[in-house]
Length: 480
Image (cartoon, rainbow, N blue to C red):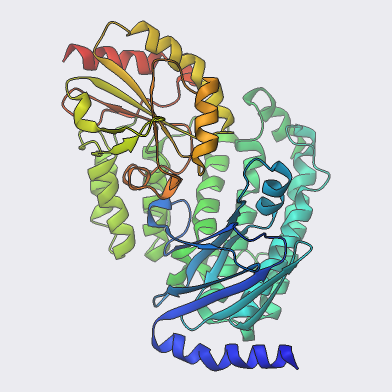
């Protein structure tokens, strides 16, 4: 009876949320403790555009939480994560990480109650059906990774075949629930799982060293997909404008292009060739997403993106995409104004960009546990030593979500040095204005600023060339 009353109340109030362009997410998570934090994040365009994230926090009381979220005309991407009150408890932290909900869809009028017990979720109320479906789709995906030996090229064909089976199972499940879904969510989910399928080639593109890629290609000989053509119907998906909001779909198309046109035929990737390919071979809303995506993913390469950005601006008319592109041009490309930060160091003293006027600045964005950040540190220390007599400074910007963790890591000097100026984003991590301004969506990210406070060409990772490009750019800036 209590469950019936609960569901009834949720359904009755759903209409009021729809009228107010709102949705409600509440729940009881038994794995949480009072004082833990729930972080709910919405995004109107999806990955990888973290600058569009809007985050809401709530402190757990009696294992419960509740949010009222503004919504719009199209489904919003929704993620829920948890932060343990005691970050020193690794067991608790790992458990909460496993409980995270990622890439769900929230619509106007939703009134969803989430219940959890023993790391199993149940969803109730208006809009809960799509949450249950997405949860089931995610469970199916986990099976693909079971038993696969990562980095082993002889596993390539088996991995591809497992993805074939996964796509068929996921499509079958989505279509069986079509009547219970809005048209927008139905096509978004079909686009999402199609994108995941196309991205299976990342097993070769990114997860294998270059020396093993040819072996993987040989292993694929004789592979024939068991997926019928009517399942992989790109033209059908592309006819629905809503698929432009599927980050997975656009990412999958781009990843597949990099595989077919580069990795598989042993040719280098070219941002300019890929841009022209998508311009010529795609149309409509999805083309806008692809043009934006290919430029965005190349923002740290050091390539001159101005010609492509200027070309894309006149071809993109969807307001959120156009806004991202204009911000990328004004905030991230060479010649843009540096962000006027005001951030604290370990003593609590705040530092502003203006303090370093007349110096060349290297901003190093990192967080505790970032493996590549750790690998980059020795290269940065060498560069710092090389320019120690010059008007040059390395400023590290931590995206840790706990000040205690950050301070402990700073003491170790594993990610920083005794001479770096170490600043903190005050537990706002990727949601801090400086991270959003620079479109920081991963670490490490390096931003080079000249003496006049203007951004320079992206230096890329010092690991790739032993810091040669970064050293050259700094030397050039010091002479100007």
